[in-house]
Amino acid sequence: MIIFNNFPLVCSLTAIFFTQAIKFPIALLLKDRKTSLSIVTTTGGMPSSHSAGVTALITALILEYGYTSGYVAIATTFGVIVMFDSMGVRSQSGEQGIVIEDILEAIKLLARLHSKDGIKVDRKLIIRKYLGHKPLEVFVGLLTGIFITFVVNMIYVRLGFL
Image 1 (cartoon, rainbow, N blue to C red):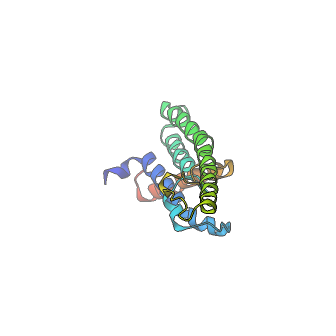
Image 2: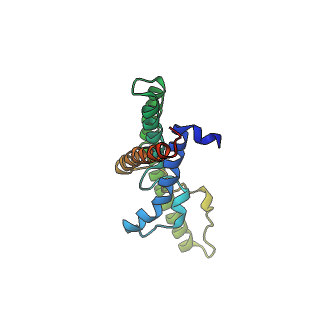
Image 3: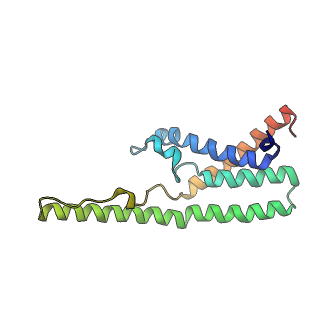
């Protein structure tokens, strides 16, 4: 298949899928009581697939074109923005989602105290808690992306793609 000719793309996608797949077992090992299999398809959690994907891309471009390549400069700039965003803006959105959910629960409790029917809350309106990443999750994602790239590189060398 022609997609396998694009080493940086293969590394990035492999890192993203691998990182998403290991989120559930890692959450179980960390004894997160709220863990469900749905964490595999959501954003957030340990490790960051955002960081793994962009770091795998940067590492693959370095291996393919060298440190001084314009591609590496573009990918590094893109990667820093993605990792910063996954820790900053997205994390704040997740924290706001927790507060909004707490407020809605308080409103529902007050409504139950003052009426028989209560209030119905549309769960789709609540922001998921796993939107953003903690710095450690981003760092582990960064290491995972580098590791995956070197593993894929070894496979490519063995199969004669590189």
